[in-house]
Length: 549
Image (cartoon, rainbow, N blue to C red; front, side, top):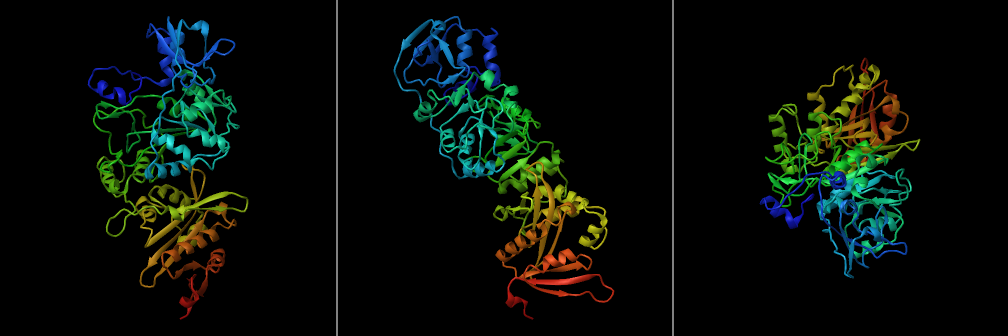
């Protein structure tokens, strides 16, 4: 067996059947070069056309190379086999014997996605751009993610297999393949796995072409697609980014399949994204799938350098080019909250991260969940899309870079002194927040993995007054675009929802632009500085009643 399924898994793990670990792209060459010999190829084909060509139908994959390398080919001609196009044909002259059998094709039904799969699909959709070309790895989870791409435009597909879930995307004009540069206006695949509806859909459909796996799964061909997206599932991933996708300890569970071919092909692609989707825990919730180290005996299918994105129901981690410290924190932050503290302690024990590293926790040490409901988009004056979202643990470096981007004057106006160092111990407390007593948002440009923080706004709750001490800053290159005002107005909405009455703070008298922004926030009181002082004090009340002394 080249891939392990339910039917032979037990026999292989008892040593009563053989398994050959090999990439899907390389299986045909075993037979075409004569390294592996077969005596007879049994194939199923459609009836011949007027020119004598039969189609291999829904399964070209390794079947065509097997037929080409076999000294004897026996075909079952089945009128219910769809006539698929591409490099999918076998001429009657190449068939030594045939039988006629009119019988339904085997159908395959994927499980309906559960709540966790739906959350993963929504998170995944956020990192897939319009005009991307999609590969869906084998399994229920990768297949289910297609349902969340309905708002995309001009997607393409180059995938080892296709399923029923492509049909609505094609019918709704989402999957057009118009922007593909490799086989434009064509879905490229090796086999179809689904229902009779899918088999009828591919019958004589010139939009979908089938090719052998040594062509479809060749990383060089995959990489020729721009914005190639490869979506694959896994069983475990350790904190450094090593992925186990095919074993349970010493027990074989599946096989290599096309995973490595497509992950590396996507990495070759201009704008490509190799992605792992994985639930944060086992089905019963008792084990984390993000672990300090892989289980004993587990096979490493993907190395630390192969994985760019990891998506769970808790978010997206970007690993490519990240240090061990950075990727450990990225993965902890998308693990299940019940396991984050344990993973943090193990990472410290293994010296992967700073010994004083914090996570977002409340006063009782309970993990604070990231409040994604406060994410929004600000469209700048030149239609630039700027993402506004709460800061999180993994933003420490971005916040430091924002601080270091300030010139001396800006640092003086923001910190009332010229700060030259922004250390880990100080900065981490500004991103590991409880989203209650401290709330901080950032303005970001660039996609995940290439993000730059260009602005930041924070309030610190004063529980006695039920108001927040507010401060903000914007990178000098992005000032005058309304970002500071938008951050302020968005923080007011958050503060109101949290039950705060208003904001207060100090502003340097030279910082006139900040004064103007603050005055737009509600019922404002500004106390001028005393003689010799350089800071004015302001209070902003959201409701008029609270502003009355």
